[in-house]
Length: 192
Ligand code: GDP
Ligand code: MG
Image (tube, rainbow, N blue to C red; front, top):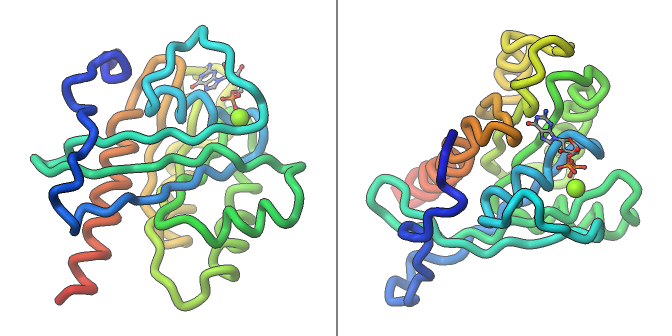
């Protein structure tokens, strides 16, 4: 298990001395109950037993990835029953997206595809970093979506893929480091 959430040594807030190091907005999408808030809370360093309101939260954090600091604001504000206005905002505001499904819920996997299509429609000409996340990998016996299905879906949708377990804190750090690397890759290729 990772001790990332409680480790404050890598979470020093940027002094803002590097103007290139602007804040990246990362938005979580996915069906209700797949574990978006659980993953977001780990990122934010909030204790598991901490009560969070259901209205949604944002987490502000700087992390060191490949010896370089990245400032992230993570938005856990998406809900299926949010207003169309808020959903629209979510689709427009992100510099990067984390689309989560549960490996124990086939319909959440199908929903992830819909969200990917919706996102593509909202941001047509843009090449936005997206990571498809199969969460709850610890629930081995109730798995409905295989790793291969997840991976294949990510290939079709031209995005990265990772399986995580928020419960075990498995691959959660890799997920957020991955999103930072994706953001940097796009940025570098634009500067060339
Ligand atoms: P959200 O609606 O997408 O924000 O999902 P939540 O983070 O609120 O999680 C919904 C439920 O799934 C909660 O009871 C969590 O404790 C549980 N959950 C979230 N992630 C995992 C996981 O990786 N493994 C298991 N076993 N349960 C999880
Ligand atoms: Mg939630």
